[in-house]
Image (tube, rainbow, N blue to C red):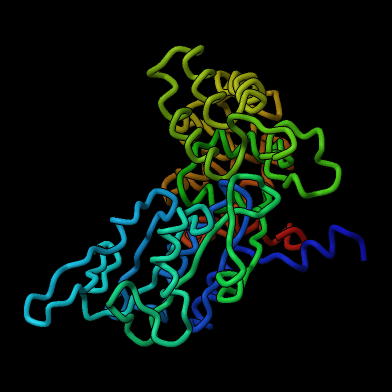
Length: 361
């Protein structure tokens, strides 16, 4: 077993992390991973868990790195008993009648006084925030970066004894692309990632020492490529026609790094070769087909977003004119989409392609 296989065995996906948290609520899981890979999105996965109904649970996001001590709780005098009582901040939602699922995001970057104030939440029995105990069945989990990331995370021994540390695997391009399609990431970004899957490699993977795209603590960049920065780059790409070429280039470099911006802007020129969706719908056998593979990729990812009953037959006629690899990319992605697959399989052309290519589905 090589080093890479050992490392992969010691990591989990974001969904696996969410499942651990949901099924073992007594433990306080510390979800660790590289910057920008979506650790805090575990809260969204828990919110989508059918066993954690919104009727029974409130979901709470706390950014520990930005908290001051006064943001956690305040001492309020009880004039009758002549004592001070700590009232927790309403952001923790402990004033409702529901259980809570609390994400203590970037706990390991919090100030020591803040960590001390939040520490009772880590107890297995009778966890509390200030003077308020959590309802039985409540869930608390933490996130933070890996110690090798070198971004200022630290935990004391008594905290480590109270948490279950779990390393989260950085999503590969194959894992990220279906998510990106479902979350409306610009097709140009998705196509570029498809052609540059190494952009989502980890600096901990062997052979990535000279990869210019991902975060690397040994070669720090002001910006780098990650799932988070790709999402923000998508916002820029979608509005690129409202800004100059130079402004878009500068903004992308400031979001995901100069190496990404230089490569992507060169790639983006392919978009000028693309026919409109309307041209494909009305003349799928006659409208122009871009010659460069990169342009076909941008086109395919754009078509995925607009699949509908009134265009799926035309789309299938058109993509059969493309490079077979891109035609397969379109069909496989649509076939795996829980919403678009119902539309696609209503097309005899799509069904016939799937029947002829069952070995790659």
